Amino acid sequence: MSISNNEMDILQEIGSIGVGNAATALADLLQAKVNISVPRATFLDLEEAINLIGGLEQPVVCVNLKLDGDVPATVLYIFDQPSACALVDLLLGQARGTTTALDEMGYSVVMEVGNILTGSFTGAIANLTGLRLVPSVPVLAYDMLGALFATSVAASGYADDQVLCIQTSFWGNQDRDRVDSHFIMLPEVEALDRLFQALGVAADS
Image (cartoon, rainbow, N blue to C red; front, side):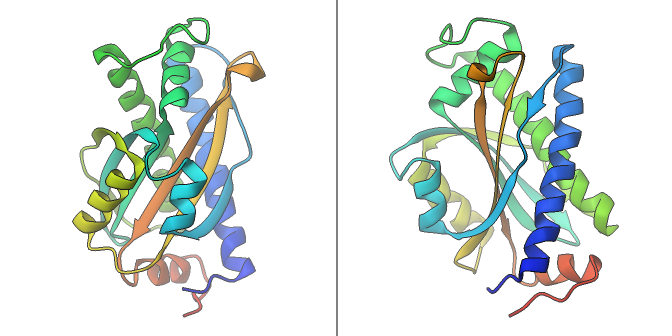
């Protein structure tokens, strides 16, 4: 898959709109200001994406869902374990480092935030394109990154060697409380072509 600079700029714009929506939703949830970094959208092969997030054996927490409709895809919203714990502290108003392992409450917090963030990005795609995206009920998974990707790729029938990765960070009042996250989209065959066509550009093959 070859992605032009123009197409990448469009994906960057989708990421920026999604981040803005997510900041508003998280601020409502927290009843406090939430800062979110400018996202970086890239197309990476699976090995690069895995290395970027932390490697095959990196324990991660992931909100996983399927998109049906005009752009069928598998979507993963991934936090490494330290970021997931920091996220729980941020949402519960605790000092960073209070949470060292996720319990039932911790998983519930990550699920809620991952659901908000995923909805913000997919909503941005739908609003910009007019395409119909129908998300499934999200599922929370905790596993090593390599196993998570292997399971997701096998379940999705993904046929390409590249994934869309949008990296972003968010924090409350203190920059040191920054939480890193990765939005991964594995589009099905021809889904990206349909997406770019709806945005008025033709994807390079």
